Image (cartoon, rainbow, N blue to C red; front, side):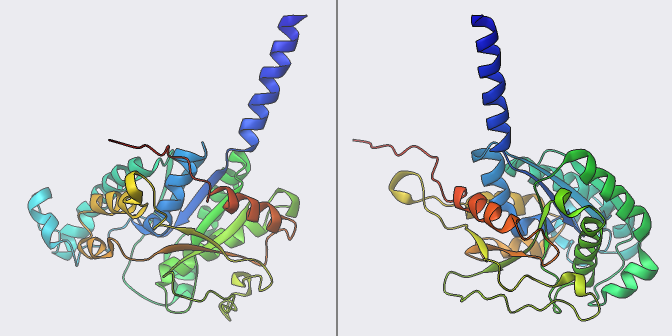
Length: 297
């Protein structure tokens, strides 16, 4: 009898722990886009016992223009377009995994779609560059098999890179294909300073109504500058910097160190309305301190 009681107690606690351990999928266009929510990812994996996977749509080959400093590291002229496009896909995957190891990313899913050039036009990318049908099908199977609680993707504002917009549109289209009750909650990621006033003013891209934000939903945040450690001298920007530092082939990425106070998450209108409170509770847990306070002589 005691053995049965122990078994059910163990099973109950296992289920309870699992329900409190969030499971998240990031869907991004390029290696290094994950830096936009790196502090949140760290908090989820290291402090909430959660799981984060990362799906990257392109092969990242177009990142050659700012690879000057990386040429001596990798021994090839990465800023020469043909050479950069040949070597950067493998280099950037290695850099991505090195950075992801600091924040606890579990699995990487690479779709290796063509990374063409900078553009604000998502429509051309979706119609003429990427195999959107194949990517959407694979994403749907991944989401169905893994049962994610949340999907994070970059907020597709008009001024963002067309590839970033396109990746988020694909993520939203994939989620929309699922029954409402089975959909992960999908959130658009942006950044802000502590002094900024946050509003749900983004109405979505006119050509893609699916990108609309729920205007009555809360705006969720995680503050990178939350202090911890001895005398509160540490914060989560340190971990973000570790991740950024691994993207050595992307010279301009290094200039983003210590920039931004908050990682901001917007609730897309296609979400199940009932998930607002669940998401609110999730981000409330994100504010719970976990590091032990120590005193020294």
